[in-house]
Length: 334
Ligand code: NAD
Image (cartoon, rainbow, N blue to C red; front, side):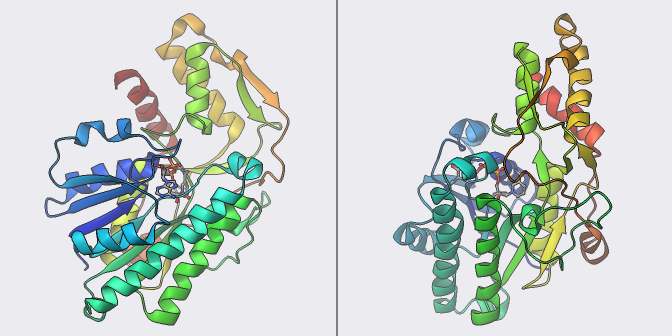
């Protein structure tokens, strides 16, 4: 098995990245992390405030497209492991302003790959199995499913439908090409919708919770029948860790929560939980409001996570019902 030591985590002030940084520092005492994040609207140091005195974590504000900065960090911190989360991640924003998605997701990933190739080749590390580049991607690169289609597997052809998923697909292909062309030691995970502590308020679940708290309408696209698979963020972190330590180089692993839910059922379940937390506004279901559907809205995403189970013995530990309870409680107790 591989053991990460000096890690560069990109996008570690965002939702999944900050959970991953915490997960790694808590689970492996030998790990040191430099966290590179541009602090766009989506990232915040508030997500990292409990790590302010952590000597094994350094935060650097900067752009993954800045080659000089990336080169310097790889050298200064003698990085052996790159875990790449940084991205523009919100589908709606990619419809109104796609350019920054191409820049960060495609050019940013390219910059990191090329800097890693240069640094690790010079250090002659990659022939000896002493380094890893792990790329975080999404199930949205596979396009959309009909209700009876089998879930996405690692061999499902790419068919991205939004500028967001197209830019992530582009980055996945570059990662693949750096393995096949140069032998860069890479792994990739494509995962389903995450939820949990520190998620940006623009996303579906934080939006539902916030509107319940404020007593304002909960917007649901179309008739709410779109289906997504939901993964508790800590399960995602443990899945990434399993792939970095035990995954095969050049391989792709799909990480899913094995939890398919219609958007409307998610809303109803959260409303019921909120009825208990804030009985004065109950029933919160009355706040649900259907709004005009998103253009090109994918109908269904579902992940077949069998390879993670059979090859790496990973399965999610939360169901949606248990994970959402933890998430709602986090909003009340933080
Ligand atoms: P997020 O938007 O919460 O965080 C992204 C972080 O990247 C932010 O902190 C932002 O400041 C930083 N960033 C953006 N552009 C940057 C740049 N040019 N240089 C450096 N930092 C930059 O996103 P998230 O939900 O935590 O997603 C993390 C990764 O996981 C993304 O690659 C996303 O595609 C992938 N993913 C997310 C989900 C999900 O449900 N959230 C599902 C599957 C895959």
